[in-house]
Image 1: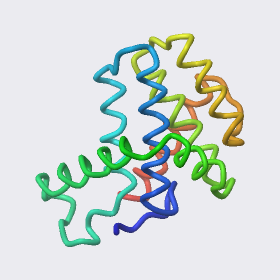
Image 2 (image 1 turned 90 degrees about the vertical axis):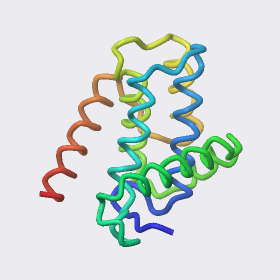
Image 3 (image 1 turned 90 degrees about the horizontal axis):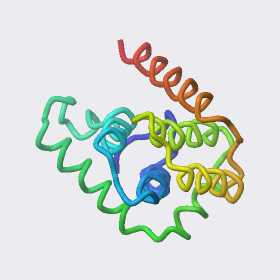
Image 4 (image 1 turned 30 degrees about the vertical axis):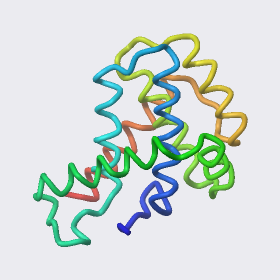
Length: 151
């Protein structure tokens, strides 16, 4: 088990959010490269790979563990994912809603069905409501804060 704590309490929360975002970006029938890159980026930013002695430079290890997290997220039931997100501490939820919106928005083309599903997830999971632009800005601001902490 890896260390978490910045935007996720544990790996189950990360997998739950990824599961939901995988569903959001697939609703239009295609997963675009820009959207898929967001998952890798999120895992690399949130998982403390150094904890297991990889020193963040063991690329094979990081890729292997990232793929495991993605696989296990994909295998999680959507009901379990929604329950995990809904029942989480509110302090995480703004960031999660922003990550979801950012991932849909990253390629500049948001399908109306994606947006409709995002709104439904927001309501079901008691996530804060925001526009796609707000989601983008919140995600980028949090990413920049993480860079400040790292450097």
